[in-house]
Length: 169
Image 1: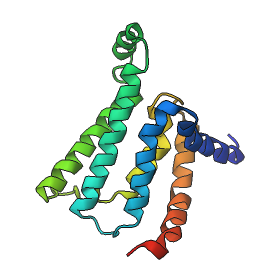
Image 2: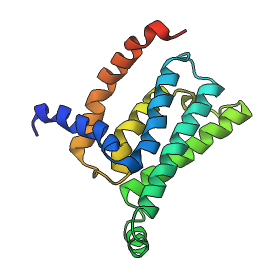
Image 3: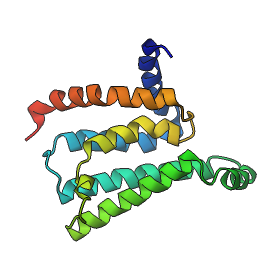
Image 4: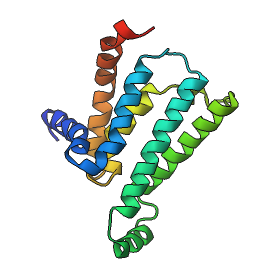
């Protein structure tokens, strides 16, 4: 596996949602939310927990829709029965559950012990955007894609963090 190919793999992950009209309504709110989150305070609070929860539930709902309704009816039954515990389904369910927990914490204005991470939205938005085309079944899960996502996490965060710093409070 050539390290020179990781930028190509990462670029494929970023551009794929914009090449398919049915993915745009799912990805654009994530980018918008990410920019808004980067302009808010770094400290975890209930407002950021609500933003995190919304982004996670939005992504999970879109992925669930793509997994169930983007295929002919006869294929949905076969796909769900054969792939009930596939990575995509497990990730979708997990993302929706974590998102719902973040929303509940935000509305109750109380984080359970060890759950204050739900108020930190920055990395969750990056990962939702990066795995979006995989979860929407336009690309397949692979170690090369996972590695590219992890390799670019810190550099992308640094660019966004310092690029938006002049506009942050």
